[in-house]
Length: 489
Image (cartoon, rainbow, N blue to C red; front, side, top):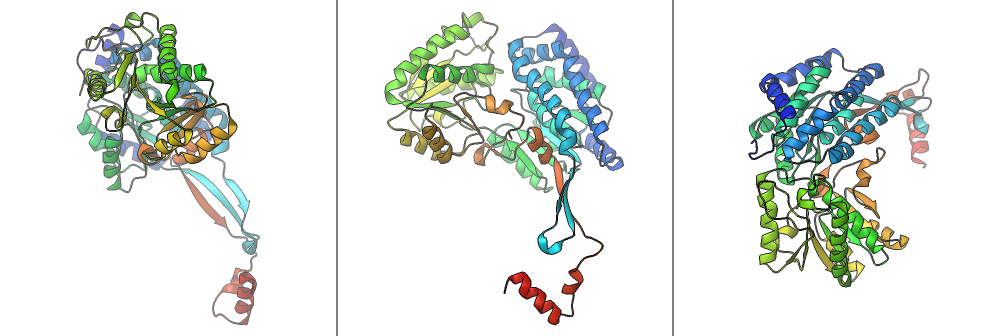
């Protein structure tokens, strides 16, 4: 579905129209067959070819910087160019350069001697491309969450099909045109279309399928993939907590939580979803957060560096979450004076105090600039609260006491953690990114992504001269003596 009431950008709209006309008819099954045939002709591309593909991807981003920024902003209604550059373009280019620097080493076989009793045989782990990889891209970071897994899949030597989100029609159309310009047929293909096209896409017999999105849709993707026994990586979401410990630098914690929450107006899968803090610090958090928002986004209603909510439906959902919480006894604390205006979809940063478990805002992933404050009496209470809920995609802990931090890490399970900050663990190329339990399965980024999209094939290489014949039937005295030695009897 294409959302209405979006602000048009003339350049991106023109590009989108042209691209849509050229690529709207791309058939998922046809594109898959072309990729499969191309992979069969060249199943193990060498490093120079993989390098060429990665350089083509970097050129796609670098040469079309302005058009990408404009298209994403137009799809959101208002998306700051600075946020697109910082949160999408920079990490995409940085990931490409990391893969170019390390990819040759990743694809080398890992050689070892065989186990003691099998010497002088050798073993190796041979990284091998899986074949054809599918990537389903969400709307909130349409460039980075397309490029990130694409880099890993290309570095691993695969062909790739990508299903873009129908909720970012301008960028999705632009990206389809740019990919067709920079990559030959059968190498990388972009599929655009509605939910029906997405279902067809997920049902293709990929060698691996990566999906980023909601838990509900993730279940459907996994169900479709299961029919083909396609392995999946699911990057989902959930309610990522921020814990302010008793020894935290309080002002620092509030500032980093609010920065992480308000990037892209909270439309980030690893944004802090609620804050656990000492009961007596709730009023201080509200006051500090209000001052921080005034500093970060002065005159927020007209501040072009604060993103709008991406769709009318999502704006209405956030309004409903806030109003339902208030009706159930919570108190809303707007942190900026922003008049309600569904036409602009600028949603004010809002804290919610006095929340309780049955409220929808405490049951659903928020995905916007609403932030519940959950008071605790002791840190044990806070950790028990986190442990009693589905494992989050991210967890943030603020405390300067090493024992407190280590205790928190030991007693919680999360997809990833940042200590004394938010968001930044996702930007580390050597750390895997992925969920656990309800927040997802599998991981990618850097070498972990290379391994996700490779078959790490185990190989045993027998030596010409070996003693295995001593264990052949018929089993006699020599065999029995050998077995006694092997069993240590």
